[in-house]
Amino acid sequence: DDGGPYLGRQYLTGESLEARVERQGPRSLEQAVQVGGQVARGLARAHAQGIVHRDLKPANVFLAQTEDGEEVAKILDFGIAKVQRQGAPVSATATGAVVGTPLFMSPEQARGSKQVDPRSDLYSLGMVAYWALTGRYAFGGDALGELIISICTQPRPSLVAARPGLPAALDAWFARACALEPAARFASADALVDALVEAS
Image 1: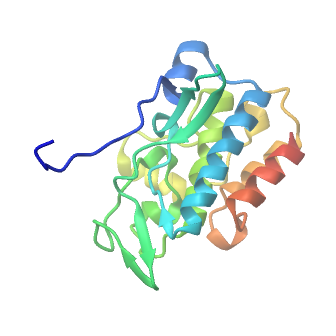
Image 2: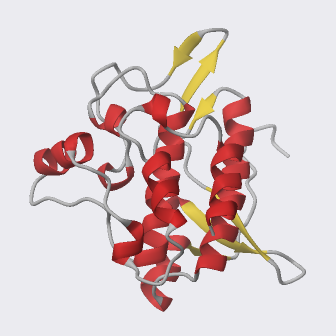
């Protein structure tokens, strides 16, 4: 009423994917595919607007309850997003700065490369799927440097070995989603989720 600026945001009821897995354990394949598909659609919308999230992780995937009792996954926290406008990248960080959550960041992001594009988010989504299905991190290390070296040099672990009983085709899907080189990954979020559904 006084003409002062304000910010309106949607009020969400529910919990993060991180909280859900910590409370109930790894998700079923059906649940993981459903959440992965919804997150992928959100990423596709962001990428179409030139936005790269750069910090996709289970804590930033919110399982929101709708008024009719359904559950929908929403992507939170675009605080370190990189925005591409008319060919010029805009972000709050300088080239060479490592931003994001190391356990889920792509090799190029871990190296602080300025060549971070939507395929980096797709890598992170693959890592989120691995964690949701197994309750484990794909890579680890006693120190940040060791973790980054593992992310940038080690072969991708087997998803099926981490959770026996999953379809064998998920290993090939995960290896492509989280390939070391961006060019070897899926070209889009839609392609990633289509392949996930087929592999499942």
